[in-house]
Image (cartoon, rainbow, N blue to C red; front, side):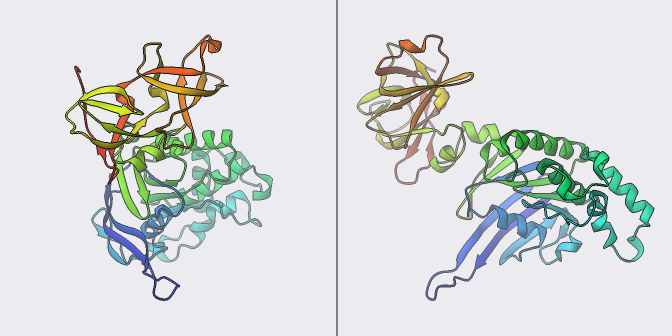
Length: 367
């Protein structure tokens, strides 16, 4: 089911007299392709959950339209939209068994579409098998782990065969290892059912790992839409560049001068196609190469070894970031001196306008 958001806006009256209204979602335009998983991504308060609630019908749009396929559902009640919604808090009924929790949406169906008790049990079992909890049908939620409870919530959302599946930060209450396993399960289920799915999260790693497309939001405004790796490799502005990536991108104050990116007086990369100007320079942690002849000199603060990765935490007078890190491959870590010389991978270096923070395209000289 294709979802189209057409100039979607949600405005809340400000409780403080004389203050402007709060715009939670501002002129959101996007077409979600049929059968794809979309990650709505951004910091707390950016409008991603409000967007999900608008799609589900739990919130009413101030302006704009919502289409499911050829159907305008903007003013359709949530129970008639055909959505399956999974909440962050699971929202299971503690006094009901797993089977009864999954069956609950079917028991509320009235009229000609109402199923018999046996048909409900059969559909509940099918949904349970899809999320691999069919052996837990007679347990109560209190007898389940957090991951199992989340699977019950997903099965309950799927049992009515919704047109659209909506997931509101479904992994936030799980520990790190369980989050990894559960997000893989969500992707498997979505691939098997081919349901158009919208997944809300503030965790960029979650969104990038399972989404076909990500939508990065800030202050109710869409900053960038694209395939996860494309957005990571080509961020539209400094906010997107800083939000995506763990560890985050290193940001410096610099300038383009005489055909080079200059940071702290050093020509760190020769480029073409950009006029002289002050810029922000972003370098991904994996974009550094230890090189005695490197043109970028920094002061080592410490070396951190984290399994497969070695991180050099360093400082530079032009730094804007609170902490600077370079992820490197190195066998002899003791060889790193107090001053570290870096060469740079050009495809990991970004420059942004100083005023608008928009990304500036450039060509590496000689490339």
